[in-house]
Image (tube, rainbow, N blue to C red):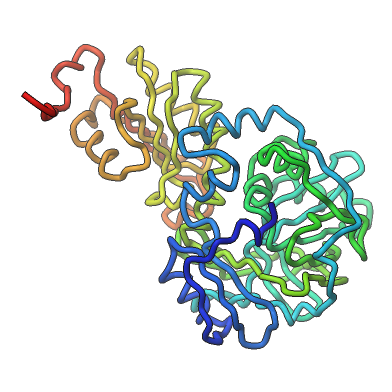
Length: 420
């Protein structure tokens, strides 16, 4: 399916709105509903946001449900999907200028207008192909500045600079949610995220040749920006990240824009920073890896990076406990699988990890701090945590909120019989 086939707007805004704060305000108000903006000031394109506004919607996009999500992703990870080249590429129906895209300015102190749903595609002769999600600040009609963390695209870029070359990139916006999910998933170097997206959807993904660079993009994308990642650096930020606080200002690489293309009636996908959609696309791709690691030391039933933990900093894991050592082993496994996590709660399988009340109940009734807490000092944390040190070091806490095996009878939950 394409982005537009998946999109089912629950709110349609007919009033003409500005890309500067006005659309962001509406997206913030309706975070749990897909919103389509029919008229955008200064652009002929429509805008859609909150497209994947719930865990259920994400699972639907991947062809599964909440209960089957972890196993579905694990199985897809073991397959190699199919990529089909096509000449039928709706995304190249029209050429336009970068300034014609309805790129939003979201929050008061943001440095400017940010692309937030762009899948960046690149290739390296030795390292292979890569698709990853990066925020991009619009500098002018020919330049973007991209936030690069030291992962795969950064390695591609560094190698290109060492050769004295710019790195060709293509940015696809308005792609099927499975493509965004796969592009945010922590695959190992050499695995291509677009093949993973095909495996998740259980169908071939159609790709089309770019016009200005030697790359291929999803043919059914709504918008494509083609360019080169250059040696030029520029300030990037402030930007409101997943915690709803402003990320640091850094010097980051500039993308020289070579061409912009779109469908005739394109819909621009805007992910509101710190929204439910933002947290789902960042957090849910990390959960299967947590599940995989934790399953090596315990029988894991469910995993969640919680919404209250910004989809990034708090993990909850439900297990079928068989020994008193297992919860601590799970805590360690989670912190290895997702180094950005700050607090880990391990609960029994009768606790719903997606329910804040259930998690709080488990901590209130099954946890003793002097017995069940695991404290890590001066650990590597997340730069997105405003309470961490500037170096990114932080304290971490593991909470064993499982019932001691010898005390299960005392913790039996009362039930009211259906009949006498």
